[in-house]
Length: 243
Image (cartoon, rainbow, N blue to C red; front, side, top):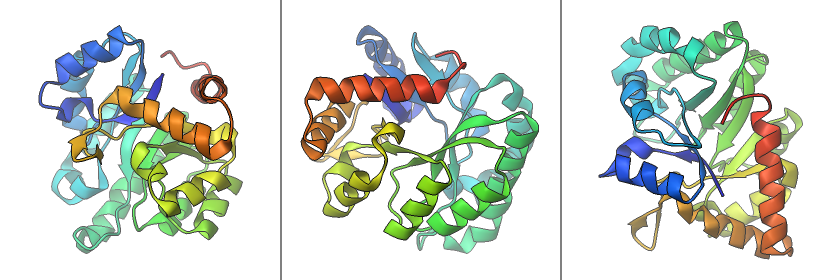
């Protein structure tokens, strides 16, 4: 199974979670929220786990000074995340700093030859898409937990974006509607644990099994068919990158 967006370092016992992922044979993309977290998070990575280099938009104002470290680490890292923009009320006041950070990261990815990027776009989808368009050679954008309008979604699809989908998205009417509109060949599972929860408990990487089950129901195909399709998507997405 696959979890293309979780925060391994933010679980209470990250090493134990990482080892359990390995024992279950999960392919996990462990995203970070600051460049300074990358080395420590990468140190706990097990077999079939890759650590992405990120600077979360909610921390852009506070950690702006880590862009230099981001650029230093970038040549070593094929996966980027979590990056993006957050237009919600608590973070809108730092919008300009968020834009500066996001644009800098995209520009750095262009200069580095492109990266696979896990992108946050809450209440900011149109501007996120503008930025991706402005840096078209930055790599492959994966819109994590997309919650924009259907118009934004269609634009993202037309631009070639991918979409990581977790259980919370599939347990809401709007989320289900968006997922039905996404080409099946560009859907990839995520947990977003431990931030995302189910029944009041943080999601764990292996809880992406719920994504497979819900997609089976939504697409009216067998669980095994979903597994095959998502595995094909994963192989297509990572291309020549090691995982």
